[in-house]
Length: 298
Image: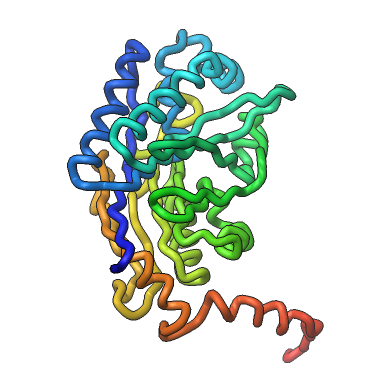
């Protein structure tokens, strides 16, 4: 029997709250909605947890550095909220990432992954100019492979998806599905993540699930503008959409995009596909053993 997986990927708005209970109610509504559609894997975006800064005093939430420190007392309750929902509904869930302070005082961008019986996290590996500059958020722990009821998963947080060797390392370790939570504030940023996510699906012959933040939160200096389209991408090959787009939102309306993935069919492409990108990857290294020759044709 084929291994199918029902996926929900979020276009998640940055809302404002008057209490932590408001956030918990929102999280519950979103999970309940996805579960009502039969979803087994739920993917939420990068920095979606920054909406909790709306609970801070104006003077704190307007300060890029003060806000991330002020969020830290909430973080255990945030983790508990998403963990409890994953357990209650029996789903695998990638929660919105948030700045996370380490013991050495540094901040990382951490996304927690929950199953009905477990929890672990993935830290972003390569930081954007905004993160490592004005915001002061740096890279965290190494890439991880998660063995879950939804399959073997790897997480590439936003900018990480733009670096092929990170995806390759996860796939070589056994990842059969890559999750790409993102937060981008321009059309250009969204398209960089989109096209790179699609490229990773083609290169590695895996499915890639992309979840962005959407809408405006002009009160926030960190996530004021959010542009993206939730999507599920596959290889462009037998039995899959010719353009590799299994699901893609039509507009920026908040909500879930749903798709059913046949993980066995995707894996089989490595044996019977029109091309063999996954196994042919080492051929690049063979060709690069030869010195690049510089030619003058002027």
